[in-house]
Image 1 (tube, one colour):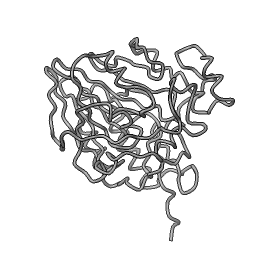
Image 2: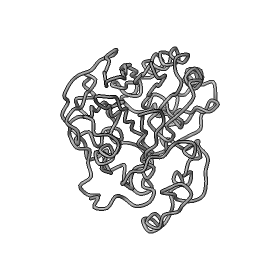
Image 3: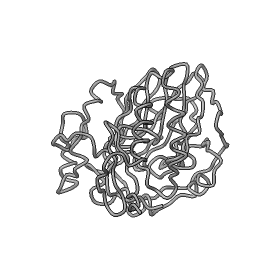
Image 4: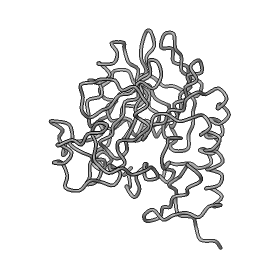
Length: 324
C-alpha cells in the first residue's frame, strides 16, 4: 500500500514564503534540517489558524487548537500530509478520532489535554491516521478486511512519509528514521454504521462513509452540530485514486453527508485546516459529479493521475481512459 507522492493534498492552497514551526517565526532547526524548503512547506503558516484558540502543549511536533468547546484539533504541520487528529472530550471519557503519523508522541499530547480514559477510533486506516494507535489500550474499528489487514502495521508506507521533501523542519528529538514504521495495534471492539459512542454528556454517531477506503467513516455530534469527515472531505486536493478507492461508494457517501448539512455548524476534516462551513458539503456533491463526468478539463499530476478542480474543491483521480 505504497503512497505515491505526485501531488500534496495542499497543492491548491496559497503560498507564503518561509518555513514556519510557529505562526510568524522561522525556526533555526527548520533551516538546519534541509537545504531546500519543500514547496508545500512554503504555504505555512495557514492564515485560518490565526482565528483559532491555540492550546499550549509541551511537544514541538504538534500544534493543538480548540475548535469547539472540549474539542481539540491536533495538527502535524511538519509533515506534508498535514494530518489532523481530534480529541473529543466528554465528562466520563474522551474519543480520539485518528492518531496521526506516529512520528511524534501523541499520547504525551493527549495526557496534557485530559486525564480521562481515551477510546481511539480511526476515520480510516491509511498509515497517516493510525500511526500512534499502538500507544492506546482501547481502539475501536470498523469490521472490514481492509481494517484487519492494516492493523498488522507496515514499514514501507511509513518510510514513504519521511522521504526527501516530506518533512518541514526538524524531526522530533530521538526519532529513528531507519526504525520508523506503522506499528501493529490491537482492536478492542468492532463498530458499525449507526453505532453511538457515549462519552458522558456527549454522544457521537458513527456514519459509514466508504469510498476513499472501504472502512472510511465520519462522526456526527448532532447536539453540537459537529461533523468529522476524515478524508471524505477536507480543504485541499482529495485523493481518490488508490486501489482501494470506490468512486460509486464515495458518491453515495458524500450525498449522505450533504443531507446532514442543515444540522451541521462545523465540518472538521483530517488534513490542512480543521474547520469548514457546512455549505462545503453540497458543494462537494456537485464538484464530484462534475469531475466524475469529466465536465472540466483535468490537469496532469504524475503518471496515470490527474487533478480535477471544480470551484474550491479538487480531486486527485486516475487519468480517464481515451474516448473510443
